[in-house]
Amino acid sequence: MSPSLLETNDYPIYFGEQGIRALNESLRSGDYSSVFVLVDENTEQACLPIFLHFADAVEHASTIRISSGEEHKDIDTCRSIWYELLTRGADRHSLLINLGGGVITDMGGFAAATFKRGIDFIHVPTTLLALVDASVGGKVGIDFEGAKNQVGVFAQPGAVLIFPKFLKSLSKQHYLAGFAEVIKHGLIADADYWRRCTETSLADTDDLQGLIYESIRIKYEFVKRDPFDRGNRHALNFGHTVGHALESHFLIDDERMPLLHGEAVAAGMVIESYLSYRMAGLPHDQLDEISGFILDLFGSAPLRADEGVAVLEWMRKDKKNVSDEIRFCLIPKIGEFKVGEACSDELIHEGLNYYLQRAELQPKKH
Image 1 (cartoon, rainbow, N blue to C red):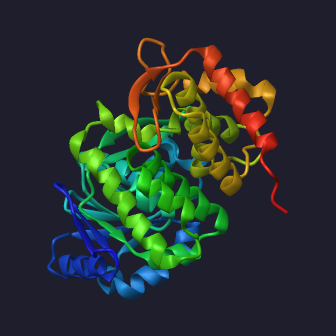
Image 2 (cartoon, rainbow, N blue to C red; image 1 turned 90 degrees about the horizontal axis):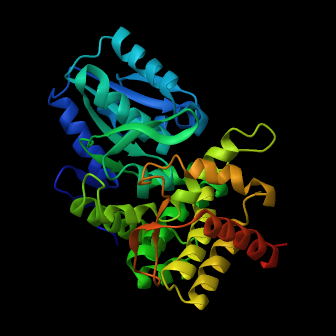
């Protein structure tokens, strides 16, 4: 059984209905002049009615709806949020509740942190990805010119409310996308936790809730030690240097569907595990174990052999780069990490080719 509260130095993370009760008490005490709930068309339909049923003090809040999807995580959508806040009378004592996945929590947090030099906001993540990643850590921001998370700030929410009932609304694809961040935490920090991830059925709700709690705790430990992402917190970017590049690459491709963030990170972890094998001493049997598990669970991204140069160009825009060197978090073995590791263009291409070849060898599901 997971605890109902994880206390952090900056804000509480509530699990279950305790957070809803705390929110109701805060709103009834008159802490805020007005309350707004940010949703997209999906969470407005699937999650908002459930949220309002339990958080009855939010009943008269004003709803702001934006379009779903990473392609809308931009300055134009952010401007529309500011416009709605301004024209509906929000002031510095207002509260914005971000009810949604990672796009909602990233962009809602950024909009709140910059509106009138900052108003309070609370995250209510509704996807597995947002539960274990986007809602914890204080990074909020938007994409710019197609590149991921290029504009943003560090701003902490007043609280994070984790309500597992929302996970029931997710498709299998979105559920899996969130699980990518869960297994990442095992690969960089805890070999035993990685083993639990590989042995847990996604249909086992009790086991999964325990994994979620532990995943959040692992991430928070990194954030606590490096709140402004200047050192070892870069370990949380394992799989993301390649993953963000793949995500941006497919986002602007009119002929193919965009990759979900977790799908791109899953592919990125296979490729960066290969770089770890070549550069950091990751044993080959562990490379094979990681690659096999991820490809079996997620399948392969529809990457073509002739797209390596384009993907590499997106990597050059990564915010972790130093002096034109593309930097990675690598893993010497499962459960350990090294940050700030530069890899050559040739080696990155080798990693992309490994992914394509390994995906071809993976037994196909029927």
